Image (cartoon, rainbow, N blue to C red):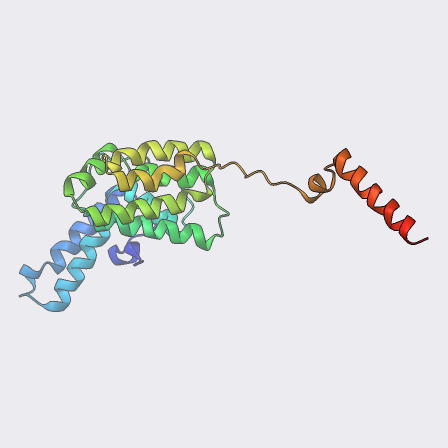
Length: 221
């Protein structure tokens, strides 16, 4: 994933106000209309806009910081989402999953849950539903469910409730997230060798065996 802080020329500890100021200055400087349609400026402007979409929104910034390994206190939710697309959320959740797997599952469960939960606000979930990008939403659910396999059962159940809203009644989506509702499965009962060995021989069979042995012994005399 790109270094959005570097693109905007700010430090990871920059305030939201500093990020906004940096974005505005760079956007004006590299706007295609002010550079006679220069291709390099156009690409630079796209990078600047992409960076601000992530860093300008508190929840998305938190998720990005989590994937980059920045240690900081989370700001909490920002009610405004700035021109994100369903693909924006997919990229974030993919990055979170990669971070979790690179850590080998050795993660702070509460922090992971909060990062995902902060992105899945009612406003953002409604946006994803209304965008009607079914394939993208399906992949988003896949990324979240995969990331959540390392959470404890209580947190999985809470995430299941959140994802039910995103599923929006789709049977396939509901099936995908069902694993978070019932993560623990009972182990099948197997009959041990010791149990089989301990089964007693019936009296009738024992009498028959003894009788055969006696007859063989008599015939051998």
